[in-house]
Image 1 (cartoon, rainbow, N blue to C red):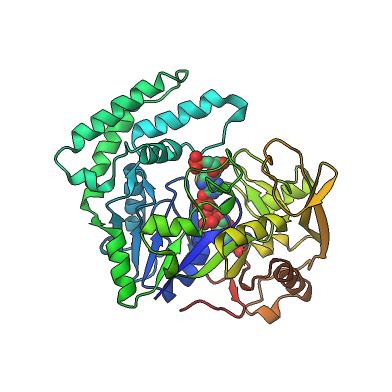
Image 2 (cartoon, rainbow, N blue to C red):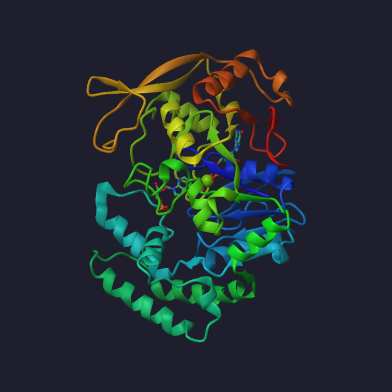
Length: 428
Ligand code: GDP
Ligand code: IMO
Ligand code: MG
């Protein structure tokens, strides 16, 4: 059996959580493979709303296993909050939640360093979620990090103290900022009790045994391809590999085990934080997208920047990820537009290109826009692809022609039920 991968193709917040939840019943396990509590994955069903940061989005499906993979960075305080919130809402999942021993831990001083580093950058700041993601991955690659498995070892306290004092020395490089380290540290130490009580596994063995036994696994990405540390709009990116290759690293599966790659994209585009965004709309239209799409961060509440769908950017993400099918989300947000635009190329330096330039962060590129007819009506009554208005179908099919990948899912609202399948091709 193969591992199907589901990931975001833009700058995050594409609606991954909703699609994972919708597909989860086709699988035996959902496994998060990278990122940390910088992610906010929203799920809505039965009139309830949940936002998950660390816990995989398969948790609401009875009997389904959920693995926090080795590629994820965990803040035990946030994990504890998530577990307690879910339990308070009556979700029973502890015996179905597995945590890789090799996942790295976010310490309070990682968050302190994140905040100090951002503060020192002034107007060049990344716009980080300040969850300590960058410093934690730096310690991982710098071979200094603490991992989940360490919390049960006798020398854990000593390892913690050593890393903390290294961080305190590093903090002297930055101007002073407000950070109540003592309080944060007390909460962190207390939260380790819950982390210790969860089921720790050698995720790579666990997942490969499952594959051998014919079980189906869905790997859940966080962030989006344009936030990938290698291929995103560097340096305005996150600190992990968000693309399909990251699923191999972040779970311990071989590349040839990858099956379907489901790319999730909004029907328009958003980004939160700093950095280039070629199709950004700084006007009334952008404002309308933000309002209609309720585009405010699920983790930080920040307003998201909005713009038209960027097709050269999507093609780039499709190429990097080997996307085999697309889920198009939030198409309903376009309901009231007479005309919808998409970028088909970029213009800069007197040239037209469909490739993202290396120096994207330093130059001004203009999108070349194409018009599509809007549908000007609600999509609420459509449960079947053929029931969508003709103009909406024409939009979907124009995207397919340009991207050369089938759109197998069209999401028309935040709720679980608002998902139209179109010639679906998962293994489920
Ligand atoms: P994720 O990080 O990729 O899981 O996405 P987020 O949860 O951060 O952001 C997506 C937002 O859009 C959430 O508020 C979802 O409830 C909402 N959403 C998802 N799909 C749709 C859709 O098809 N239509 C609308 N209007 N909202 C959607
Ligand atoms: P999900 O999984 C949208 C952005 C931040 C910032 C940059 C670096 O919900 O799609 P970091 O905290 O990683 O140092 O921030 O990346 N970012 C996201 N934007 N959705 C996310 O996750 C994000 N995770 C990080 O806004 O610009
Ligand atoms: Mg999100």
